[in-house]
Image (cartoon, rainbow, N blue to C red; front, top):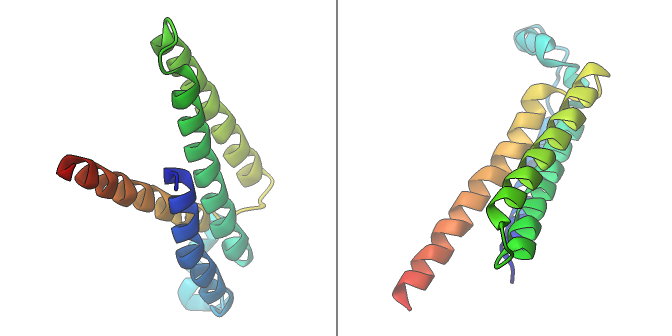
Amino acid sequence: MTLVRKVARQALFVIVPLAALSLLVDWNSKTLGFLRPFGNPAFTTVSILVGAGLGIANLKGMTWGIESLLGAHQANTKLVFLSLLRLLVLFAVVISLAALHLINLLGFLTGITVVFILTIKEALKTAKLQEKE
């Protein structure tokens, strides 16, 4: 099983319950009023899912770029260009969604952070298994 599939499967087991729990929170209470500057708190659930989805898409794009360019002549230049292009697209999507007030930035960061942590965990696990062999 590839790294992307492992991370996506594990993310489902973390993100879906996390998004479901965010539905139970009363975002209009005065105690959570400090979240208003980060976007509409009502969109927190969607933002968590969008963050996780973009995190997995970014991981898939990164692995695709590395796999397609391994062994190619001047792969370093192409890899840097494709990585920067992918980053530009990711920023454009996030900024567009935030400008249209369709996401809550804290929810988005929560989703993308979960995917980032799971990616690191799986990479360390894979490195440890390869070290034993």
